[in-house]
Length: 230
Image 1 (cartoon, helix red, strand yellow):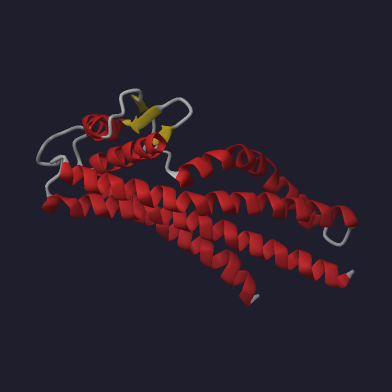
Image 2: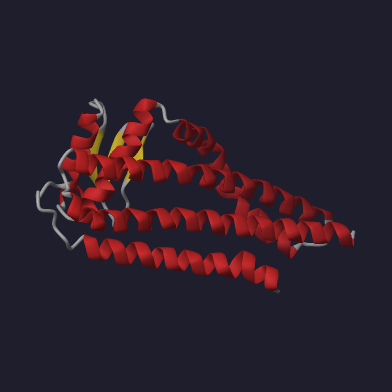
């Protein structure tokens, strides 16, 4: 029972806390305008210009916190509030995504590794839950054990992808924070709002990794116990 709490319940609570943190930090700092009144789009463009990036399109996408950088299409997508907003949160998020564009341009090794893992991770995500659910229902049978093993392998791929994601996200935030100050987009005394937003966002990636790792260890324990019973 204690192991189940440690591997499943604690990561789940940590994930809920991380989601609360990002919603709270973003909700607070999206209401604080920067002194320079530069929009998120302008900030992202300035950060990329400073790195000599001229072939990345910046587009507006629907949703909240749906911001992302697509290295395949060389497209930087910003949600509505971050595309046209001038808040500290908008500038932090926009510069963060521009940080990913810089990683792509300079060939940052961990980003390249993550891109290599992406196709396998998509396949693993599609089969992991189904294999694990059916495997647990049929535990004790040879077929159930095979499905659990397949699910564990799929989970391991997801865990590896999320582990590699951590340095990619941390590095993008580091680049973003430095460039916002270096380019004069945000004054140093305004950076607390940027730090709060980006640090809270980073916590969600840590929580996702911890949750997946806990699930993987849980399944491995089930498989180990099943083999002993055999």
